[in-house]
Amino acid sequence: MKIIVCVKVVPKVEEVSFDPETKTLDRSKATNELNEADKNALEAALRLKEKVGGTVVAVSMGPPFFEPFLKLCVAMGADDAVLLSDKAFAAADTYSTSYVLAQAAKKIGYDLILCGESTADSGTAQVPPQMAEWLGIPHVSYASTIEATDGKLLVRRTVKGGYELVETPLPALISVELGSNTPRFPDFKRKRWADREFKLTIWGSKDLTLDMQNVGRQGSKTDVIDLRMLAPTERKRIKIEGTEEEIAEKLASIIKET
Amino acid sequence: MRGIWTFVEVQDGAIEDVSLEVLGKASELAREKGVESSAVIAGWQLSNIVEETAKYPVDKIYYVEHELLRQYSPSAYAKALHQLVERHKPEIMLFGATYNGADIAARLAVKTGAGLIAHVVGLEIERETGMLIGHVPGFGGSIVAVCRCRPNVLQMATVRPGVLEKPQPAGGNAEIIKFSPELNEQDVGLRLVERSVSPTIDITRAERVVVAGMGTGGDLTPLKQLAEKIGAELAVTRPLADMGAAPRDVQIGSTGYSLRSKLAIIAGASGAAHFVSGIRDVKTVIAINTDPNAPIFEFADYYVVGDLFKIIPRLTQALAR
Ligand SMILES: Cc1cc2nc3c(=O)[nH]c(=O)nc-3n(C[C@H](O)[C@H](O)[C@H](O)COP(=O)(O)OP(=O)(O)OC[C@H]3O[C@@H](n4cnc5c(N)ncnc54)[C@H](O)[C@@H]3O)c2cc1C
Ligand SMILES: Nc1ncnc2c1ncn2[C@@H]1O[C@H](COP(=O)(O)O)[C@@H](O)[C@H]1O
Image (cartoon, rainbow over all chains, first blue to last red; front, top):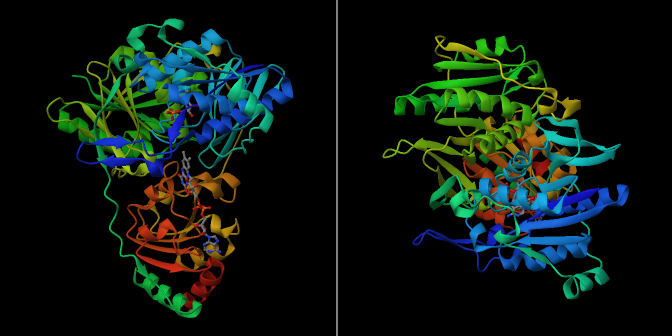
């Protein structure tokens, strides 16, 4: 099975600061990491590959600094990785992001595309279904397990109040639920190989068949017109002290009053 | 005059609460803009749902009926809605940000070249332009991006459940317009093999909530007993839902639900950004954690540095006295 895994690099949200004067986000001090749910997607892909054979290719659209994170995907077990990087791709909303990713998937070829359920920074969960629509293939979102059975996939997806088991033909796109598995650590030898010898494929807009009307800022259908920091809710921050019994009594009277 | 549409999601024979929440807001916005507010219902044999929807403030109901819509499929639903949008050309279309609503909206946005604003917690009409403005929480919920669609495209948004008030039934004069989309078997793509759901509680409406974090190690017994004692609902942080210790439906935070309760007692949660965005609107927060430097204390009105397994049972006892 030919599997593509879409991954994105995101800043740790706790470390992003906001300047209310200039209304800009400062990501420069934040640690970057592979989006957590995308690691779950990669792990799901590697497990499928171990069962049914095939290849796993990690794909990301983003700036050149994503490179080491794609190498990390290879170190974890992906066979190949492609970075889609071009100034023309910048400032894309989910419409133009999903378009470029879909065009890249066509070029790579696939039976199955796996995404994370959503990203930690913007977290729209829109890119996977939008990508599936560009490609004209079925999609299943919030998958917790994926099983391959004679050319089809049996997917368990989380829904309100429980789960659904859904069967989908291939090719298909599946978004994988955050925390649905434990992503493996890269093996030391493979990591060294990925860092030193593996050559990452980088494609710009010229390497893909693109209608530039749909790409980047120009291709986007939405704009962010303002950023606001939510002032934290004022809290009293009163420490309750004493013996365990005293604390319990004090809390009980607070609870009775509210 | 082009109007505002609300997709009314039907699950197991009932309307999703969030759809009514959105419908109420859509009707307010439509009045402000001086346009019609319409509901869109899609499925098979849903005349009871059409009747139910007509009880709420809405001008028109588009009823998209097809046998192939009996079972949920994002591609078939998006195709059917696309045909309806082509016919009547709404200006704005709103969805509840549910698992299925968000899927259908995303596919429809690509089909129609629409702008889609995700998971909004607030909606307004921009005075100067008459355009839809959506407030989108990002970065774990501490920052809100104010978003607008590009001119001359269908403006779409999905709305986070539990942030808007459900409207009172008032109306009954909605015009009902039936629509039969053209669909074939291949449009469905997916086959539902099994569905297992139990009734959920709407944690966003709970008055009192006890929240368990990983400090419980997955043992929720003492917190359940406390919740029972004070008539509270039990909720959890994300990792506990991941473990299956409690259902996703009671997970608090940026990828779960936001509380609006009078009281929340939070035990064994560290206070990560993705979590605390879900307790912003709680009136009184009590936090218990063994770590004197736990960030959760910054977000608490009363806090205890201590072991929840020692404090909580004693608290339950004290409340019994
Ligand atoms: C994209 C993304 C989305 C996310 N969305 C959410 C979300 O919606 N909701 C959410 O909750 N998380 C979410 N998370 C996860 C979040 O970042 C944190 O990992 C999570 O909130 C931590 O849960 P916790 O506080 O229960 O566990 P921990 O961080 O492990 O904290 C456990 C706490 O318990 C304390 N403790 C231990 N033993 C005891 C004891 N006996 N008595 C009292 N205290 C004790 C410890 O001191 C510690 O502070 C998300 C993460 C990502 C990447
Ligand atoms: N720039 C990107 N490059 C590769 N994959 C992406 C990108 N943006 C989003 N995705 C994929 O789409 C998923 C959902 O993203 P989002 O819609 O932004 O929440 C992510 O978990 C990724 O799998």
